[in-house]
Image 1 (cartoon, protein in one colour):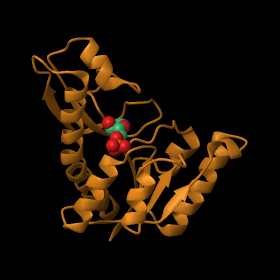
Image 2 (tube, protein in one colour; image 1 turned 90 degrees about the horizontal axis):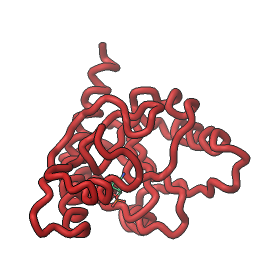
Image 3 (tube, rainbow, N blue to C red; image 1 turned 30 degrees about the vertical axis):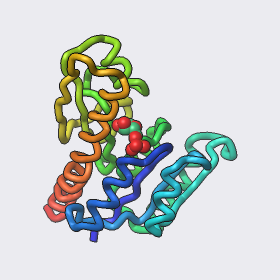
Image 4 (cartoon, rainbow, N blue to C red; image 1 turned 120 degrees about the vertical axis):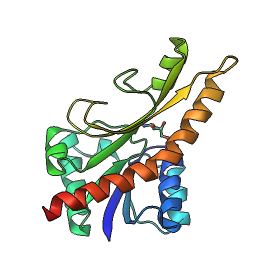
Length: 195
Ligand code: GRF
């Protein structure tokens, strides 16, 4: 069974969608670990409710980003993790980390990349008054919110939408497509490993 680690910093609706997909067999993977950098994040409760092991760390207790990453990589390698799934993890990785899991890190972003990169993608799209935004799942490279796109889905901005109603539709879309995208990603990785 493919082992994945999911990295989260917040509410964890995408983490929950992945858990549900594993439970009902849509995602053929084991969530071996949830990595979190925020001690009060709701996502920790979700992990606890589903008995998923947690690696909670305080970035400020390390002398550098790379030092914290070395510990994370060691932990992931110890567990035999095959792929990393970022789900609302609000930290940027060093080249060391990206290199350690090259081509094996996936991210979800709430816009149609390359439009609206950054931490406020939904708000930025709403304020720009675009007619259409969406969700992108992509493999992670050093440049933030870049990297080969695996899946995209458009979300229309409707007349009368508020920022909140648009956010809700984007999150619903994310929660629906991320398990499918992760399944397709790990199938691709398996095929690559065989060849
Ligand atoms: C999502 O919008 C995701 O695209 C972004 O962070 C948010 C995480 O939401 N990277 P949640 O914690 O999964 O509910």
